[in-house]
Length: 374
Image 1 (cartoon, helix red, strand yellow):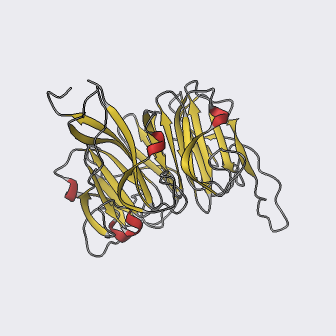
Image 2 (cartoon, helix red, strand yellow):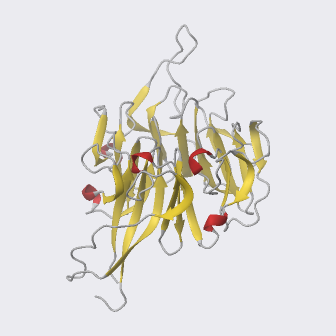
Image 3 (cartoon, one colour):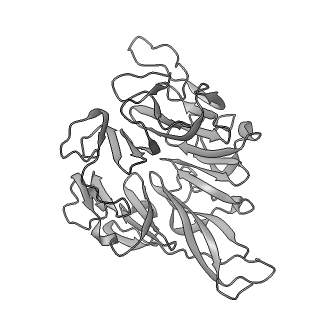
């Protein structure tokens, strides 16, 4: 059976991060039309920009670009349509990460590439000397370059805020990080001690997570809102196991709770110091959760999306600006494919992957034909 996939977007578009050819915000989902002729299989929504990877390994980026974050020289302020990263056109990109100021990518040979802001060495290259104030001088890497050359990488993640870090998971189940926490900045990757059999990593604004092969979840970094789930607000410079998770097939939330971004539906929207089950999603089989700046989206096994949190700029996709801690379904109200197998398609859209950014969201959706249609 033939299938058709599309990339959809909604929320803030002030930096072109929706990829729809203008800087408008969208309260309902819309199609990123410039990528319709490609088969997108992976997306990331950064704080003010976005990226997509296609089945053939092509990498597209769009949005805010003042630090060379998009990898499209010459440097521009913003780009509101997806453009291929031409420097990486001859390699097959399989995974990438983007956020405020820098971007990382990995090809099918395990080679890592980095570009964008590098003042803290987050691109794996020693930044320029510091000025008289002790602060590093800004150095942007506009053209993607090979980094971490001694590693064979299978996953990369990056986030960039006041302090920055990049993390890689190499072919052997250990984590390599630069810099390792908030104590100092280094540009040479070092191994994170205490984790031996890691299968998945994720990086937040100021903290990191690692999922071990045995199902245990470990966190380290800043903890002022309880985001480490330790029951206190003390930071941790070494990985610690997250307690109180009885089965990762259930949805749990912890950390900063304002705007209802944790999905508990409570009135105080306070921070949660330890993991708590999100009972409002108990009736759904959740297969993915993506957390943005102040909103979150949960994806079910049958392709439904539920969003919750801050609702201005249309980031929840309900068609209106509403802030809520009550998860509500995001309607995929876009036309069916106009030509599939030579006939008008009958069926419905299902979401396959979702990515929340600072104030926008991206999702890959697939047209599921009605039984018996051609």
